[in-house]
Image (cartoon, rainbow, N blue to C red; front, side):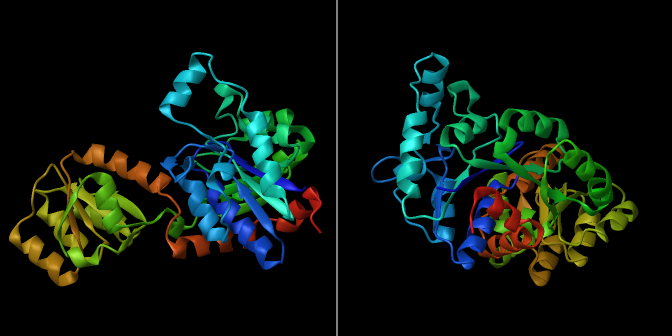
Length: 354
């Protein structure tokens, strides 16, 4: 039974996006797909067993309703890790193989999603390479651009996987790096025997988050324009500079939340009048009445947070990098990015799907 493991060089690299995009495209072509995430990292309790929250969501998007106990036969908890570190972890690979065989029945192909990186789970012999070899399936690895690509990591994985590696997908490539990636990195990888299956450009929408969710994740409180928390934030700016310098950066980042001290009414007013999606005021300092009034008139929410500007900026960076793929508009966009930028035909040929 054809199967394909979707792994990555690090966590939050776009595995769910590629799994859902690939799955939806194969379904559109008339194939019956199965799905599993052998090792879950986001435990949730179901009626019969622990399951993985991401796996449940992906099943819903793909229109599947398999038993979550089969879809994620191993779920990592703090107790599980403690047992593994004490050397009390049994061989769980037979359990994964059994679940895979059951899920594969009547399917044209099974999509197997990794958790974390290809090395995650090595401490209990459930890393991506071990799962791929045990199931006897092929593998695609996603490498998300974060200042640079992890080409050394990809070379190590090629050595470990051999012919099981179908190729790699380079994800979230900014326009500024596209020329180097296309003309230097891709030829290098392909000379080493690593097929580049696709280059997915950076898409602001995929990292976006709604103001309401942002406030919750920051532990903040929305104090104005509370009915407009569905506005979308794609990036952020720090408003600690002089207004003139801030304006230069602000004009280039229209959908950026502005993080600024609660006492900087000059920057706050410029950001509001310029139509930013929201203000994030730090230090638990409330703005003056003029700012509150303009916020309500312009319908731009203000979030109050306790931490200082630097701490909030670091939190914001992590939130935008790791925000989960949940909104349907983002799912559709992600599926479109996969369909248009990944060589799905090559993947089909590699796994014998006709």
